[in-house]
Image (spheres, rainbow, N blue to C red):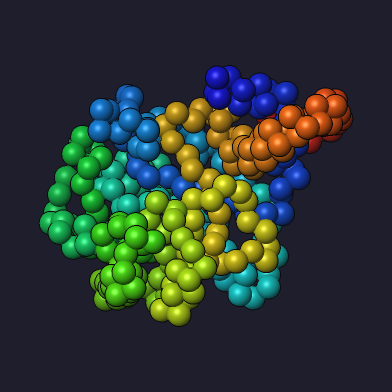
Length: 306
């Protein structure tokens, strides 16, 4: 049902309208892995590893319609006050699966698209150097990049690496000392192994708090990303950056809807309608009557999507 709805919103230009409306905001995409499997395996029921052909189609769409920048470009623009081009987007990958190297990198380098990988640093330390097969094998969907492999990707292709903590534990459930270890040790590992000047952070499971954000800022992280929906305003909190989660179930219509920020609009409108329906049903009808024709009238004049 969701995919059908997204298809309609894409076809009738609603995603185009919302992308135009959000054109001055920066969207940060969250992928996990890229795989050569034709469909999600039993160990990936949520489809977090995107099929390689689907990922290639995603990149073609994004390259055509968005200004793809690195996370460091975004941070430098924020620091200097420089305005980024409209429709700017950043690609990130959580966990540091080895299939980033064997399945995603060839497609990214072909289009010269930058990306940031958030490593679970203890996993990187357990892997076996830089001498493994460079072609995708099924085990790459469960294995992780080694420090040597990450170093090669950084030095030869310019990919950026940040922290997904040491062990990917839920930080909000840990003691103060364990939380500091997760943040500080992974920070130091990135500095020592990859010569990262000021690491970035991805909160495990996207779970964070103001206190946790303050800890990350105090330790010297450059920013921290969440899994909160929504594109980022020019002055948003750098330690609560929103991201758009993309998975294998997302075709081009779903991708367009998610990247535009329309899914966040749908969630907000649905929540509003649920609150209004019991007490003020006439307002529900009024909202639907006003919003639908307005979007339909404006969308065809915009040119973001084919």
